[in-house]
Image 1 (cartoon, helix red, strand yellow):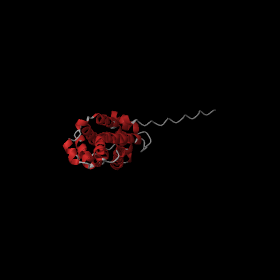
Image 2 (cartoon, one colour):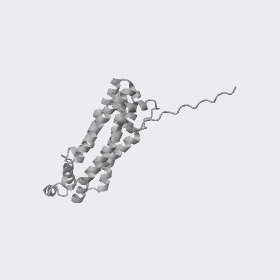
Image 3 (tube, helix red, strand yellow):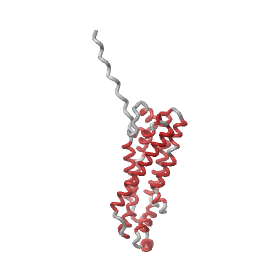
Image 4 (spheres, helix red, strand yellow):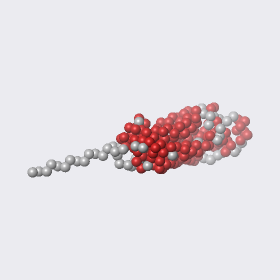
Amino acid sequence: MARAPASAPPPAPAAPLPTTFLMGPRVFARQLAPTEPAPLRYLGMAGLSAALSGVAYAALVSPAVRLAAEVAGGASPLAAHATNVLGGAFLTLFTYGLMWGLGRLGAGRAGRAAEVYGASFALLPPLYLLVTVLALLTPEAAWRPDLAALAQAGENSRKVQQLALAGLAQTAPAALLLAVTMLGTAAQCALAFPAFAVLTGRPARAAAGTLLPLLPALAVGFIALAPLLFSR
């Protein structure tokens, strides 16, 4: 009697999109649970957020860079813009690394912190784009130092840039970037808790995976914005 052909194995479940995390961390975790762990699965989302954070910061401080170059013959604006973009991107990726490492330490292997926190970065790209657009639309009158202050600074490019940064720090894009950096990081950690709770089944481990990265990640965000914060 002929043997029936063996049935094909069921296809592996597809991993959820990072945007699913925004619609519901618990839904995201339930869809992620049956998939094979892949720590780098959502690295692209973290990388996109990092790039856009660097662009947003560079767009915000670019008037200060240009003014220093025009008035005091400072460094090449292009080089300074590139440095600001790369610096902002690096610090965001460093934040992701902290979330990954400390989240795994708290939630354990079952929490899949690299994937949970990687997907949580889907929250940030639209906000960084909004900061960039507002920064580019900010009128010069909103931040430019008065003539007396510029005359006192003379050709000292550092002082000229500080004066411009002090004005830029008072603008709406600066306030929004501060909120996105600090409150956005806190929101990422808060949203990670229900995902960790589903994946680990242990609220205490979920809380540890949420709280351990929180303060270090906020500290990195503070360092990233220090030039603006201390120019006020």
